[in-house]
Image (cartoon, helix red, strand yellow):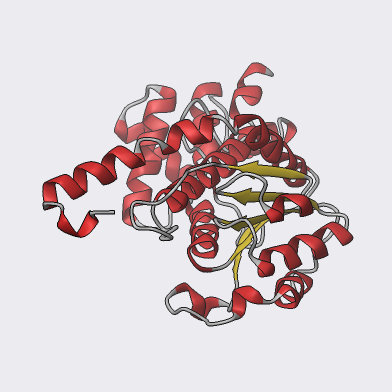
Length: 283
């Protein structure tokens, strides 16, 4: 209540203290986060998609996580997608009234041709955003798996989801500003769901992002370092195999560890459904 009378040091210290409560709040919801992730993995394994939807900060965080899956795991823009009430313009500008429309939520998902293979995660810090409720309702009617992510308990959106994730983050330092603890909690949960799902479908070897998309100089260098670390080879060999593997990091790793050609590596990886570890064990 005395935020405006605090020194800068006191203010920042208090915010830091409050932020430290977020991981504990998430820990209490791990069972539902695991169940939600299982839905996503099942969707991916059957050719389905993960679609986030939300309004305001919640929608932006969904779009952020979806967009980062492409370079990190080389997935298509369609496999993980983020929808925000009001469309792309809402990423940088508040679109008044967009979040209050259940119909808009359903219509946005209708345009995505939702099917029973997909998983839709509705994100709303308040737990009652009509746009999200409309989307979850439509998704469930299409047979898709539905997940809700709210930052309080007994949230309205929980009643519209197969799996409800409720993170009780408590009052914000700046009252009502859910871009703070609630936003941090949402970001952490989305990180967990997308990353764990990608691990489960073979996008990771050890703790290395072996399906990284080397689309710029930084990621090309990272790809080569991943090959070095995964195989214990030297830089020159890593660079050579990276080129021979047509910039496919997984293939380069298999080529080195199994001393095989690129074509052989691809055949073996396909037989192991893209899992590097399974490919090596089957040798």
